[in-house]
Image 1 (cartoon, protein in one colour):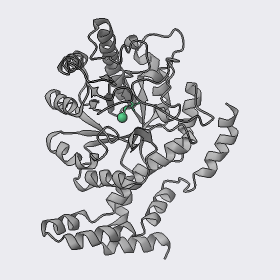
Image 2 (tube, helix red, strand yellow):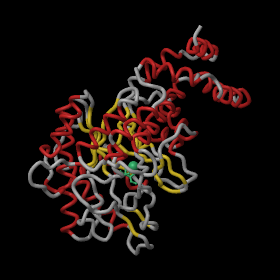
Image 3 (spheres, helix red, strand yellow):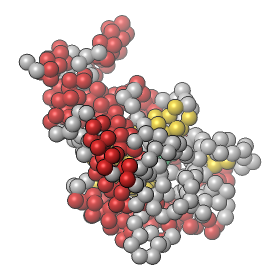
Length: 411
Ligand code: RNT
Ligand code: ZN
């Protein structure tokens, strides 16, 4: 018997079918963010990264052109098993001729990306880019009191909505378009209501553009603070949840966007009770919203468990959001996405019905023992089998070092 067969038997003793887990895992799409490849740089501006987010480090070999980024994405995706989508930001528009402003973007500026996605049989997700741009005035976009600024960003949101619909139609895969604005104040504001009222009005104006609700899913991401925006953010948790409920759009939770002891894993069940869908940005905050590479850690596993045991895999849009410039960027992509997938597999290998039953019976002794036993069950052998079945090498460092030597180091 090989190691997989033995591991399968071991899980069977827990009442878990490992084959079923592997079959489920390969169908779960992960929307992989394009911005790990160039530290959230984009192609439409030389402006420094703004909006209270930061990529630290200067590991060599960053992608600086669409061709380089596409090549890096191919290299990373070749080392990631399972179903993938590519998640783009508006700042990654590709201009062949004249560059247009962000409030005049059209599907034509994303044709190359659509071609790229179609050739690889994958869908595209999208994000309007409300940062790293001269029209962000005093750290405000959609909540700005300056009508010229607010109008510009409303038009940006509207044209992005049209682009999202174009992505869905062209690829045949629904497109998730996520709205996140950095707007906020460093110091204690005198008016908290005004900016939020303007944000609401702006979102209403953006969503007044007709779009196909079967093909385009609009999500709204909250945040508790940003660098230089410590005292107040317009798009707080309460704002975005309430707005999502009021408009029937989808809330998005980024697990770096809460107070450090607040866990997204604990929030998922509540949202599932009140929303048709839910979207996640999976990241790893270290003391702040640092966007470290996702690891196979407790909270990532707990998030995965909440989705799996509540039978919500087809209601939750999973995407990654981190940007580490201090390590090889391809390895960052692969390590982070594989960690999410490992967490999902770990969750799929738990006897959830039995564990819920133990909780109902108040048998917390058996529940604790079982949970701990499962941590040291032969999970690695099941994961290895998954990679084998997906024709993905388990050792991904060797091809990454080759690529670094052949391609990245020559940039
Ligand atoms: C920022 C948000 C947002 C961005 C991306 C680039 O704190 O998490 O999702 O990271 O849009
Ligand atoms: Zn995010």
